[in-house]
Length: 293
Image (cartoon, rainbow, N blue to C red; front, side, top):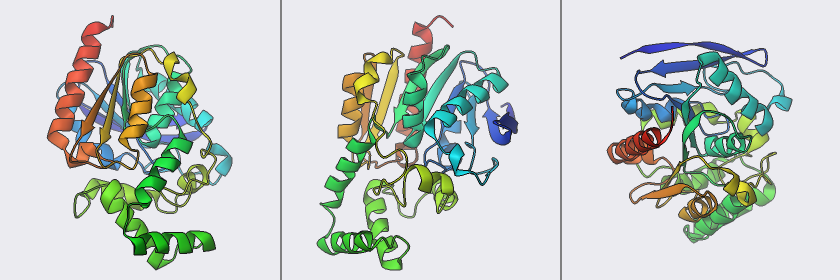
């Protein structure tokens, strides 16, 4: 299996990438966070026998440069980064996979009508941060009363670093981020990368359900019909980006299919890897056969 890695110049900085496999139309992956790094997406390398799978750490995280300039942490700049990565790697025809924040980035990218995207995968994501916020508040309302009270007390005080608050946040994560115990090692690595990462804090906020960053009002639900690429939407039954968020995507994108993973939360590719790779591989093959590549 072909395997190479290197650095790409993006906006004057170095962005790390790894390319695995050969064959069909490449799969370019956009990781979550913002700022989490590619690590937790590593199981997608299971498709590398069918096609190239390309991981990259977006600027500001992982093995890429981490410049001390918060003005860089804007969705518009990350859209440009995707184009620069595609150009550097010669990805004329490509499948695009966006998970969580990577899905928001993929949606924003697709609204620019890029050439050569054969298939789009939106994994555990949404078209609207306000909807995401609303859905997470519903999930919090179903947590044990003591956990709810702890979250509210420290959020009211703006004390997001308190150990009691972080323990309460973990109760949410165990239910709606990943239901495996312990968390898989690739996810633990990404969680370490994103912790206190300026990209995450600037764009999202202090945690997965407190959205105070510059994305908090991002909403493209009214423009989903502009995406004409065959689209697969995946979501976990217990996902923090709930099936209701996935349904908004399915109903808005004209050529979309939605698959729910019944035993998963936010990372179905880690929680139900075999079924996930089979579902993803089948979709990519069908999208390719329907396209003129």
